[in-house]
Length: 182
Image (cartoon, rainbow, N blue to C red):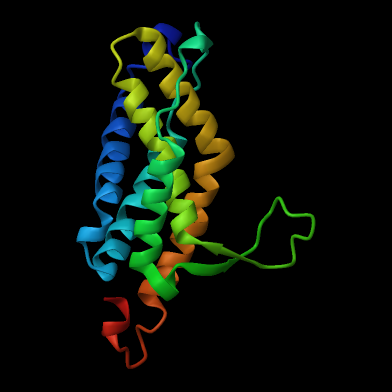
């Protein structure tokens, strides 16, 4: 059943996405205040929820595409990136198979700090645009978040989650020196 386009931007799925996205963004903005292990544990829990909420966003036809805006500046992105990179240290980089690469069999180095900063940017722009009082802003925010989920932050989230899972669980059966995670 297709939702009424006038109401889709106000659906429960969009409101729940706003809530989870805002929680993620606020946490990332203060990432330097937390221990590395706590950050990985938080991300291990919130990233699957973000993915689910992104997958449940309705498709919205935008009445006024001119109302779309971006808010996160390059300087803000770089600050988030550097905070995460400094916090994660040697655990920032991971091997990844890029499905869009000409050679899908060759792994490449990716990093959590870039992926998480890109996810943050898309979700922060979504939250800030949705907070505007106009119906057009809410429509554009919801539409853009869905499109960016499908084309950008959804895959970066999955790649990051896989790396985080490995970091948290790689030595569970070994004698682990947990101080490596702090």
